[in-house]
Amino acid sequence: MGVRVQEGDFDLAVELADFGRGAGGIVTFTGVARNNDAGNLQYMEIEHYPAMTQSAIEAIANEARSRWDLCDLLIIHRHGRLAPGARIMMVATASAHRADAFAAAEFLMDYLKSRAPFWKKEVTSDSAEWVAAKEADEKALDRW
Amino acid sequence: MIDVVYFAWVRERIGLPRESVETDATTVAELIDELSKREERYALAFSDRGAIRAAVDQTLVDLDAPLKGAREVAFFPPMTGG
Image 1 (tube, helix red, strand yellow):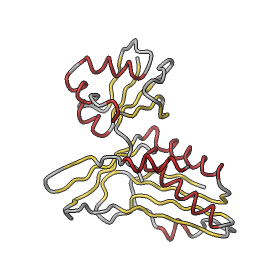
Image 2: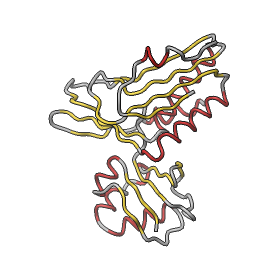
Image 3: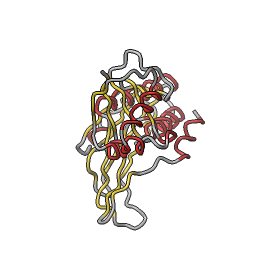
């Protein structure tokens, strides 16, 4: 079990080497800094609320553990300046059965999107714009 | 005194990341009212209340949440993690 908030990159192979020992299934999701539609993204700046981020993510992780039968869980979320294609975050869930692992991973992604204190700014050669939250992201929480 | 912290475009519009505020506000919304009356940049940052999220002592709250005993209040736009 782990929650990490960090500026540096992470290595999926290293993170998953000992993850979920004894589980029947492991689900992983990796979020990547996507280029914008114009293809001119220089970098994405991810701001966060250092005093709150870790505890907010841990609360989301604990909620997932109470709802599904998980034998392991890992969340890593980066902040700072990220070039297009860079890994932003990852979620891994391990369970005896895949249904719980998939559901918990989706739940974690939905909640990290709109309940973890991160804000993305897209910086191009001629603009710097905060990414607006989508109504669909807020709606996605209703299914849980 | 309450520490007030700002993030993302709320921080940019107000022009600072953190300040200490002497306030009689009893709720988060009342604190927003007080700050908005200070200067135009605050009024601008808080003009769309529907786009403002708040945390009291690092816990997300609704804008009508009480401030009693609060040490730190944060204001920011809807989050865009993941």
